[in-house]
Image (spheres, one colour):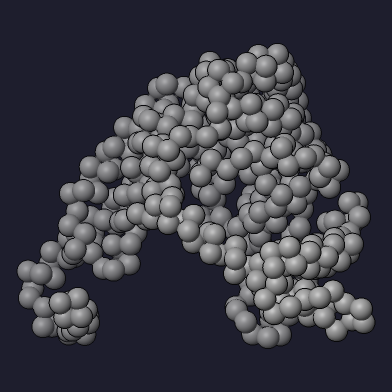
Length: 414
């Protein structure tokens, strides 16, 4: 039966448009038009209700605004998601193209997640990183991307700096201190000053391009921002950090629900664990094989049998890794070494024709302070809606801060 359905589907795809009845074509056209309209309304509403994220996505219509995290702001976003979901459910997805069906499924998932996140997970009440991310990215996205002349970006930053004290006040009002996991509190307490760092190190140096009046407004907004960040730091250090008693684990029920949203799959934790354990075995076997290549030909080499014991495998892998560790760059040379390694890897991939490579430059930069402590490195891709130069930023944690123990890293919540 399954093969018959596949054959039938293939036959329908091969069927000439002229063979499809006119009413069917009209119905498909209507549903396609409805979904296209819905998609545009979603993208527009997403930007209007999340102006900080809109800038990061390359939509600069709301660069002077920041995301409203008050109860009213959260309610508006939830109402929007519910209205979009209701409209999506009225569309006959079977009448859409395959590509549109995939888009509809993705949209359905994100809308349901947004509603569940607001009503059930409620990170706004126990995750202070939510507010730190909004505050930092609101300024960073204006400073890091060359999407407009500096005066336009600086004036937008001035408006956002003036609005950020209210966001930090919303954080203090919304956060239930006892629910915050300790590691979240201590991480944000270290990141908080990074908000001012962006203004002083990335925006202020270009203030000379502003008119005298605009420069004066920029300075006034920066003074107020520094005072608000200092006030917030006191709350973080004196109230949040000592009072944070929450468990960073979501618990089985919430974790499973969030996992389903994240993966858009019905894979269970047990199945994921089984696959992960199998992957560990396979990866270690490959690591052992590489270790045999390194040490096997040397005089007086370790005994590296085809079928090693667990101890033999571990010893060989550890020795091979220690050779790799010995070649690590000095901390103050990490950015330079990473840049050279990127150039070498790019040249190799292009020379071998493994995959297509972007023509625009890729930059290695230090992780902004407001983001340090969550990940060692990640890729900051070009904005889907942006018109700025199509480059990618890879951010590495500040080498000066790499002496922090693993316990200082924020656990993944999914």
